Image (cartoon, rainbow, N blue to C red; front, side, top):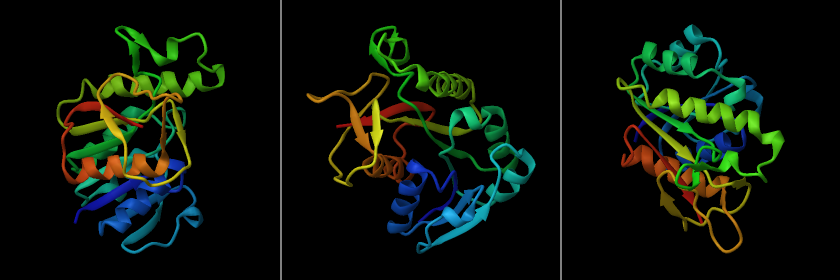
Length: 203
């Protein structure tokens, strides 16, 4: 059992990760701007927090075994988040990543494909910059987990594949449910296999 701080615990991915952590018996500090949106679950302590307030966030993170960040890249700053984790003295940092920086062919990223939606580009570019920043961090045990192209509500099946930097695809496209993504994230927390790496999950 780990003591985990989850930033962005009320969001689409964050709420599923929160449920998965609770189901597996972890003690979770669930951090969100609005704690009313955090589901009451066993082992979960809601805390109001701002991902952009480094000092206050560091105080919330202190004393945990790991931090999981599930906040939008366009609504946060990688330097502030990493700084808060460092200031709190937490060595382990896991990040809900994006699919835009994955490759569809050597040197060809998802975000650079002609059919990539314009509306998603700001978040995708920010996610790529976040990953680039992490790749220069050598004093934290970080992991960046990218979902597949379609990251949507669905079922918790436990049946998925893991990859590294290439987009995972299947006959109907490229997808992963929030629920199965949460399994992959908590699996990585419990049995680290991608230290200072990005990896991906998909069907």
